[in-house]
Amino acid sequence: MSTEAQTFKGVGTPATRMYGLMAIVALGWVLLGGLIFTPEDAVQGDAVRIMYVHVPTAWIAYLAFIVTGVASACWMIGRKHSLGFDRVAGASAEVGVVFMAMTLLSGSLWGRITWGTFWVWDPRLTTTAFMFVTYIGYLAVRGLGGTAQQRARRSSVIALLAVLEIPLVHFSVVMWRSLHQRATVLSPDGDIKMDGLMLFTLLFGVFGFSVLFAWLVSHRQRIMAMQDARQTSALDVAVAERLKEAQA
Amino acid sequence: MSMSVSRIARAVAAKDLRIELRSRVVSNQVLPFSGLVMIMFAFALDNDDVLQRVAGGLVWLATLFSLFILVQRTFAVETYDGALDSLRVAGVNPQGIFIGKSVALFVQLLVLESVLFVAAVVLYRVNVNGSGVVLLVTCVLCATAGLAFVGTLYGGLTAGARGRETLLPLLLLPVVAPVLICATRATESAFRSGGVTVGEGWPWVGVLAVFAAVFGLGGLLSFGSLIEE
Amino acid sequence: MNHAGFIIAVYGITFGVIVGLAIYTIRQGRNLSRTVADKDKPWT
Image 1 (cartoon, rainbow over the protein chains, first blue to last red):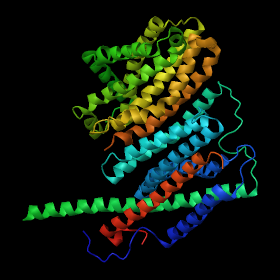
Image 2 (cartoon, chains in turn cyan, green, yellow):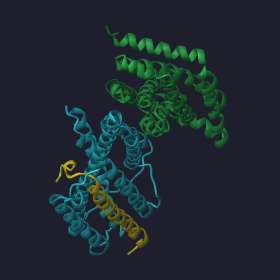
Image 3 (cartoon, chains in turn yellow, cyan, blue):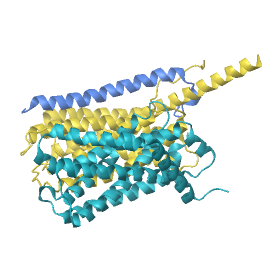
Image 4 (cartoon, helix red, strand yellow):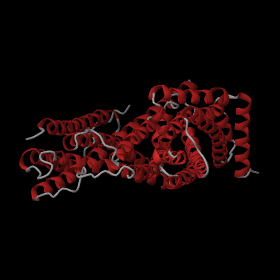
């Protein structure tokens, strides 16, 4: 174990501190604006307040999925198979699964207010639920153990297969639900005529959550780097001890 | 001199099917299990009209439940004696292994589904005739191909090491959801349940064919990485 | 505010989870950082 003076306290750098701060400001605004300053919607009433939180978390959840896919592809294509890409993929999935859970929760409560039910078999909702379960499967595969490169190989294949599979699921569900034509008056996002302050709060929220996502993934990715480094050095230490035993 | 992919595939498929013929695990365990599942559905749903209406879905659900067992079985025969590792170490082309195991799984699934459809006719009183049969056969072939590819692919990943087998249903079910949706709709068309015409079933079979193609190709490309340790 | 319960629940859970996750991440980062040499931290 290292005995060098630890000058660095954590995983923050000036860059991450900057966007951490931006996230706090933006999210603070969403909290105050969403709950207090913005007016209620003409059609939805106060239920629109959930949208300021639901839309950004949904956006982040989908973004995280794309980032995981792209990072997995980068790991696979690069000749060095740089583990940094694998860690970003994993960190993004971890953050994504949390945000997806929050999206499903907020959307469900929104639905309870506007449609009267917690769930409808709407294609977007159903596909989101599938993405959530797929994420969980991906994280389970990451937890299977072995060396970091083994983990990277397995997870990148699973991630890329998921990228193939989710559009197929979505398409099948769209075809399926089009059999049961329902007039949906309101959908979970868009379709709302928003006045200036409401629109600003929504967009600022998307910005704030995006920056939050970047902050979380950076930190998570650095933590994983340290965990991988510890595993390697633990291995080195064990090998050195065995060598000493053999020579003694 | 390395063998060609098709020779490897044929050898692997023949081996798997021969093992099954000798051990009779599918015929003596999986088929009775799936028949039981069909009966259990009747207990749970307890309504002849409902059963007839949803028969298509029940057949494919029973197929999926049995799929997990079949997939785990097809890889258990490999990992039991480290056979898969030996094949890998010997430098056998993994694409050949993938195709071979998919073919064997395809055959076993077809046998299973035939029995299930007979059970549906008998237990749930569905009728199929004329153009419905053509639709049904095409649907079954496309759906089964997709299931075989996906099962082999994810089975390869979850085979072997402790704690991995339980991962298979979690990984597999979301992936086969499109097959369940499309195969059920096509089967309902073939059965003409609830007034659906046979013609309406064909688009669903189209999606099944796409699914099989996507995962057949995906499997060829990635199976090697998945079974590597 | 109508449906105040639901709305506050959504905000409470969302922001609660975010704050909790942030605190957990920072803490984990600091704890791990003590045990790993600086050379293994490419961001320093």
